[in-house]
Image (cartoon, rainbow, N blue to C red; front, top):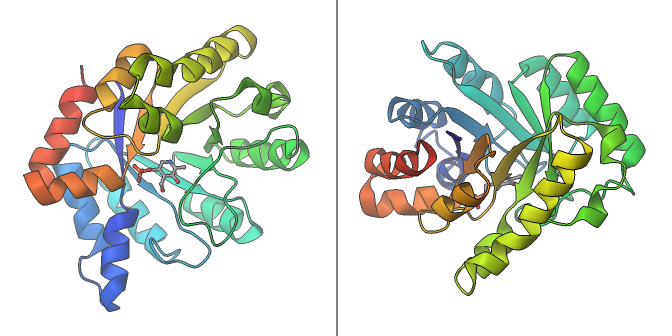
Length: 245
Ligand code: PXP
């Protein structure tokens, strides 16, 4: 089984469009949990155009107050501000992404050669606070040099390329990901796997069938779009039918 973590950034984007608190991000996140989401993911960007840093304590409280275990995952670039707030909030997991400040969305994973010392420090620091650390990575073994020293708990496979190529040739689209997972299993067996970006109702089952080790998928854009057609409750059920297989 793979855990479904819903990325609520797009709901926050809608809220911010009118400068009011509608839709209320805490209420929407509660509905996601009520309808079966096993995790909530947020990606507070420096310009706060989606989730704002002020949303984090409220979401954390909601998540901690649930009877069942819900995973809280905070994604972002490890700036001083980001690291300080994440350590205060203490989510279950922090996913480190190398986005520059104005990025529209995350569009590449870490270059572990170039950012070795930054990542070693940041990863160790979060781990000492008992926060699980996941690194957003490209489907390329070359970008993983030094990962054995950085030693995050997990990696999040950046699935944009998979999603883009899936419609043409699913087997070819998954190939680089299978190679990366095989490489990591052989070389750093302690690492577990998450996946995210552009996953949807069409490509998710194939991904999870090919890489059943994936522990968590974080899905935002497509799920919110599907909710226009099927409603939030039925949409989440459709995703859960795939992830709970
Ligand atoms: N993972 C990371 C690191 C992301 O930045 C995002 C988008 O915020 C996602 C997953 C989710 O991608 P999508 O919105 O395409 O489902």
